Image (cartoon, rainbow, N blue to C red):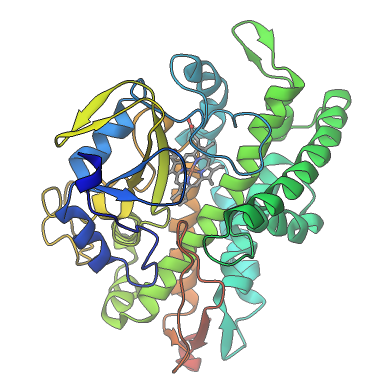
Length: 396
Ligand code: HEM
């Protein structure tokens, strides 16, 4: 049966993925050929993606990703029920009430960053806003030195987007392994230091945290740090790139935000849905299961395409279009099921404040004429986003 399944490539069109998502959904289970021993199946419709995410006992995260890590990253690569014990420790620190305390700090930092370029006519949005805002906030939250931001961002880029020919899996693995070793080495030192001198940062909380009445081992803390540095430093940057690339080329929607900032919480959700910065992620089948007549065997790989799920007309009316007044927006941009994003409240707060403050002070902007806007596949960032800041008189 699996020989008759069409081969698809969900990484094909990061710049304008919506037509690709439409094609993917035409065949509910596709096959991706990466040259691995086990088949990789691609799941693209909303209901099927939700099914995979919710059924962690069939679709495991344990061995699904190898990105230079020596052991499973915690909690992403731990299956239930063990997974819950780590989430019980971590969730309270990133819950809505806890992150709300960061609002003033985020707003102040956003304005300081805008002060740095308010008098310019042109900026590279990615470098001058999308990187420094969330990365500074994240490093403050976990208690890592801001002056080392470039080093941390370089590490996470080497892991998430290694600079190799597309499809050169071996070269990518080599870069990831070398970078992974640096991350373990660095955090090994930081953990020792926090054990001796606890601070009031998140890393200190984890270092001194307990699961099931015992302290975390050093390896467990390292496995949390490995994931955190990647998850915390990349996704909000990529999401800001997606938002502003979209708004800079859709002046009516940008103006709607300027005219009524009250719409911004809905903008945060609708652009998360429409742009879906994290396009895909993997699972491994751990129990036989049949989906749409295709038998999946233990060990098979499954890629869920969040972007095509989020633009599935079976779930969302007029799904390919952006509507800030959309009702019942049950998008899956933060995943779903037990591994649903731990940082979603923090991310949403940063995104809301970034949209509020930027539009308050810079109500008009556009992409530099002739500049090609190119998105990276997998996690969609725009490393070069030249924005022209217009309407001089209106800037504050
Ligand atoms: C808009 C920004 C973000 C997006 C779109 C996003 C997206 C996601 C997605 C799709 C997952 C599920 C992965 C899976 O099930 O395999 C996830 C998990 C996770 N995210 Fe985020 N994320 C964002 C921001 C953050 C931030 C800022 C942090 C840290 C402060 C973070 C920490 C995590 C962690 C630790 C997990 C694993 C949770 C678990 O396995 O239980 N994320 N994220």
